[in-house]
Length: 426
Ligand code: UD1
Ligand code: CA
Image (tube, rainbow, N blue to C red; front, side, top):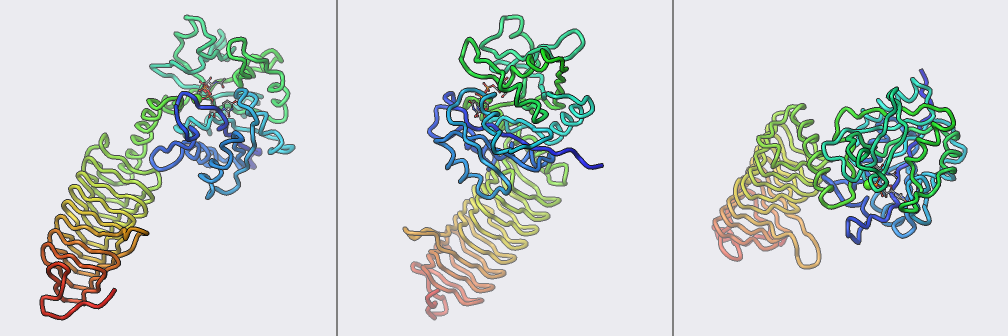
């Protein structure tokens, strides 16, 4: 069966005053990705062939730069933030004469999952609806638009909190902000939206009443997980969505065979990959597109950052930070170490307190440590430095931009071969 055409319009042009931030709200990051990128990816995964991102003129460049790697993304500028209905209309030119279903998504609601979008689209199509929306049931619905249903269960209106009376405020079913709209039919509905008497904004949510007035029924599909509804208007909500996405990511890794001893204290970047039988000990932060291979153990109190590769069976332990580095199979950095911009072969032992001094004051420099090498406690490797296979350093050695030959042992400050031979410039 061929699927009807699907586009997505992601709204990211609001003023975001409640964040009190210089940075556009939608670029605040959650587990490694800007808020809006979580949304764009969900739309793609749900089958949107084209995605139009609505941005403000002042943040256009910053948003485009942050999403530079994403293909097939179009930008539309909303000249003035006049409300969500106005923002959707700003995407009209970019969509040309698109005919089909458009998913409208809020760029500040990163928890919406592809499977919820798919459920919404399924119901929308099954009912041959013109306008449908995804709702969520929240214990604390404050700040969200409330979904008002008639006796037949159809939605009669969405009332924004600011415009709601106490009875409406007591409703716990909220508008997630995600809509499925048939285009071009809905352009005309959007054009008929009038400014709110309270805020002067043009609300997307008003299309519900307008659709009903034109005789169409409006379906609200409840999201399976209330977390899908969460939006970010404040820093407190940013923390809330971080917690939600963190739990989901951790649950996925566990389902795929990783042990996470304490998911509550484990932060894993949305881009990270963990193989089966990885074990993550408590208080671990994995930040960046890290890869942790089968049987490796990370933590407790470990921090991986940037592009990091932890080889099979390798171990990164207490108070160890690994940045833009690779640890080969069976290598160990178990206590109080900083490994930055380094490539470590298999079976390397990094002694307690070892530091890779990778910053020369101008730029990051690299170190290489060969297979089976062993760094004594409190070694400092001043980059660039190289240790050959099986090389060793004594406790407290400071290896300054030098190459340690395979099998040799360097000691002292600056470190020299214990056999008396000098190292050569690395
Ligand atoms: C909106 C919904 C509310 C819903 C909530 C879910 C409306 C009127 N209200 O409220 O029913 O419960 O989202 O999170 O739609 N934006 C623009 N241009 C504008 C205004 C906003 O692009 O002129 C963008 C914002 O950048 C943001 C999104 O639209 O990403 C939502 O705007 P926001 O002001 O946060 O709406 P809420 O008050 O949260
Ligand atoms: Ca919002």
